Image (tube, rainbow, N blue to C red; front, side, top):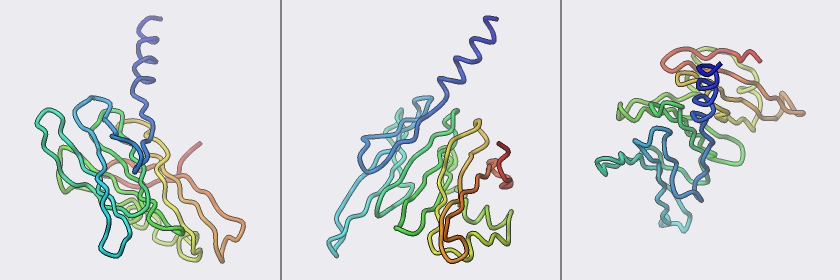
Length: 175
């Protein structure tokens, strides 16, 4: 009974809530090794932009992960070895990038991964409002995300769930 209780407590402690930027001060990974911070600036045309940076807390090193214009949401994997960022880039689209703190430059674009696994997905092709959104980490290696939207093909809207295995394929979620 005690080992099972400890496993349940560890799983609950590993659950990480999403952090929205701009607005939050930082999004720390569950292990305390890293933090994502946001730096905001004004463009020459009067609009704003934001940079999400990955800070290595022990060394004070920092590197830019992503620039965005509107807002973004950060989800850390339970083991802190990956993070998913939903970039709410426009009123009619959003994207997801997965980053790996220990592998600078290595990223996964979930729009491209979805296209690779599902070359013909009519919901993406014939609707003019299409959003990708990270939902939650199922475990340290699997991210659940949704594809939702509306438009000419689906005026009433659509909402689909997928699972992305890090470095692998995208599959429809089994609920």
